[in-house]
Amino acid sequence: MRILPNGDRALLVEPPGPEAMPGLYAALAADPPPGVADIVPAARTLTLLLDPSADPARVAAAVRGARPAAAAGSAAAVEVPVVYDGPDLAEVAALTGLTPDGVAAAHTGTAWRVAFTGFAPGFGYLEGGDPRLDVPRRGTPRVRVPAGAVGLAGRYSGVYPVGSPGGWQIIGRTDAVLWDLDRDPPALLRPGVKVRFVRREP
Amino acid sequence: MKRGLDVLRSGLLATVQDLGRPGHAALGVGVAGAADPDSFRLANRAAGNPEDAAAIEVTFGGLHVRSRGGAFAAVTGAPVPMTVDGRAVAPFSVFHVPDGAELRMGTPSTGLRSYLAVRGGIAVPPVLGSRSTDTLSGLGPAPLKPGDLLPVGPPPRAHPLLDVLPVAPPPASEIELRAIPGPRADWLVPGALDALFGAPYAVTSEIDRVGMRLDGPRLAHAGRGELPSEGTVTGALQVPPSGRPVLFLADHPVTGGYPVIAVVVSADVGRAAQARPGQRLRFRPHPAPPLARRPSRQEGP
Image 1 (cartoon, rainbow over the protein chains, first blue to last red):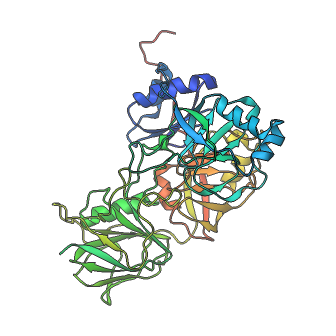
Image 2 (cartoon, each protein chain N blue to C red):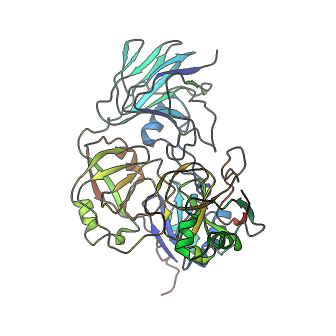
Image 3 (cartoon, rainbow over the protein chains, first blue to last red):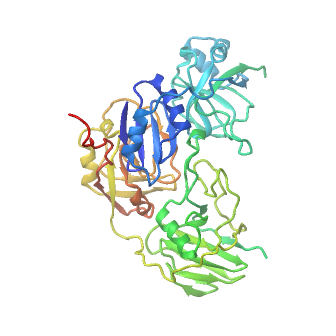
């Protein structure tokens, strides 16, 4: 495990391999070392944001000593109903060599898992899906992608929680509410949560 | 009568800010909060408020408000000429705005962001524990606009202790900022750090609460490919493929995919947030906090 200073108020933690990420994140999130104000999970790293009072060396030692915990959300999967009629469905079919129906079958065929969040409140980067769905981002991002758009980019899938610009390949749409400030927690998709997409007819 | 402020003019951008909403990264929510936290805290202390009471961050002056119920107030950060019902008020002082009186802020002589703290604090409803406007995610109250009525909370027990605040206004000349080499400096060509520390960078007109784009010696990527997204921090100098760094401020995204060459130390971020377009920043190398524990004497060889 590598731990690097990221300025004077944060540590960048690189677990030995991607398989070590969920357990380490679960352990640190459940029992943050003293002085840790927040933990930002990302693709291959965790960023620990520190309080002014924190001793970075002590936090680093606590991270090295943390025992992996069972990843949160290992229970039931969140079901997200999707109508597969997105503007990039044909393009994704062409890129993958699948039919549009085949893309939908691949997308619904395996459970995904929220690896990390970011980009916008409630946006989860989902990984662990069918490897055939690894497609590049669009060459030119869209100025506006509507809320509920279901997309693919690289090995990730994601759902836009609010309308925003975006460059992911849009294969479908959902009416699931990804972000609701009147709900606790407001985000449907949080790191560790399992997601299963379910096909719905328009 | 309910205490409050009627917004008559908002200037370029005026937002409600406090010390932000840390602890929600798992929801994809950033911290936000005052861009210059030191000036923000000072305004609250001057007004006799708790340090984290909500205040107004005014960008490049121009805010006009009318008091309902009267209140003590203080303005810090970028010094602006001010009047209360036409009578001049000194910046960095504690003053009273009587019921119905109008506080007008002009254009700052130096700096970019002024903080107006009102005794009792701005009492808009909090979102995820903070009243801060996050301009990137849209969380918190919308930026102020004429016609808004901002409620003011009950005055705290503590009384303002100071009449005049002993602080220096933000400089008009070059701003020196200490920066710690970043965790991804090796994703840039050898010599990029020397280039960053070797010459000043000019603040471009592309600045907001998310960050400020800088112009200076180009910092080229080493060609290691695409960095997987990782957590970003306030003060980070992120280098997009253009080679022109962006200094992240309060509303920066939670994660980012460009390498960070260096990170401005937390104590200097507020001074960076006061820099204006055209002003020059000079980065000075600062040592990273030590992470290895010193071996204790009891340990064997």
